[in-house]
Length: 220
Image (cartoon, rainbow, N blue to C red; front, top):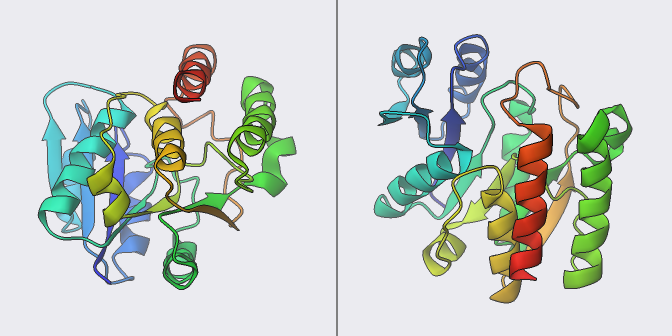
């Protein structure tokens, strides 16, 4: 199975090098989408031998993911592992995530932070719990973390669904469209290294949470 690691990055010079250092030991192709960064994100990615795709201005996490997905499909990847660039995710768990994805026959496998929801603050904690409940009630999927950006997607799924969102709501859009199209979705317990990364994340609690909620309702 041809697998690549995709990292959307915006002004991530403080955290990206450590992530790429660890990823480089896994043997998978590395793709970094520099989403209009004004710092050294691009040069760091290039220095670690990652394939660098660049936006000339900041267009949002969702658009960066879509750019990376397009590259992966053009290069016949069977699966794409997505990681955030802020250092929250446990890179060493990628082989376990890929193995569970392959053995379980999933189209989306989410690395779940469910056990750490209590450590999150404010709207993140509320929405993660509520989002999980809503997804389970509406779709029947036993998804324990609907907002984790640490995921493995099948090429089959990415070729089959048309994606439109540019922001953080893209990850909800994928879940809802996958559900409506009959694809398989699962969760794997993988605690994050930093459960609440508000200090390094570009997530806007009110605006992005609202967009995610509206995306869920739109495709419900």
